[in-house]
Image: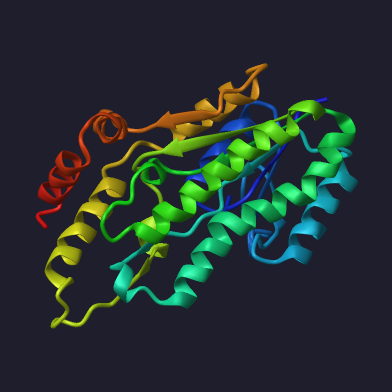
Length: 266
């Protein structure tokens, strides 16, 4: 039987492209989002809200009822946020953490009893290269993805005795709809952060609009699914994005921070 794959956040962008690729390769793919049913997709659609525990439970139960198994869970649903830490709304931070951290935990908790019973399964959490550094005006987003990375590391250790694997995929800039959906702090013209934030936000948008083609990630995900022993982390981005992670590790803190401030004209 073909492997059954469940993807969250599959209505557009990265999740949709991954779902398209896997479905075309013969996998049984369920793409989820809050209101995806009725949309014309090449994969099966399933309404599921990762911020609602009951919705997640119903979604997992439906897939198991129809297919009898879930072989791969891909936690892709995510929400961006940008703004000075001083100006972030706590409700917005809560919403981002609920989508990017607690949401994946909900789906993992719902699917794990099934995977453990079968002593097989794979959980792929879509994180971000932004998890590796607290970049200016992206502190909350970076924190949410860093938290997801650490949860994944813990999962790998906890699940090893049961034959279930977990890994993180860290994309750099990818051409998706995240710019349109990102939460953004509206700063008054008198804000001391206004000038540098506006400049930084332009660079954030640019990194997405000029980012990698999302189709590349379908190929990577298929490769991971077919790897007997998955690595902890897979990073896919432009050379400079990946090199920035290395620079943070090897440069003195003051040198690295000076470089970042210069890049963002701070």
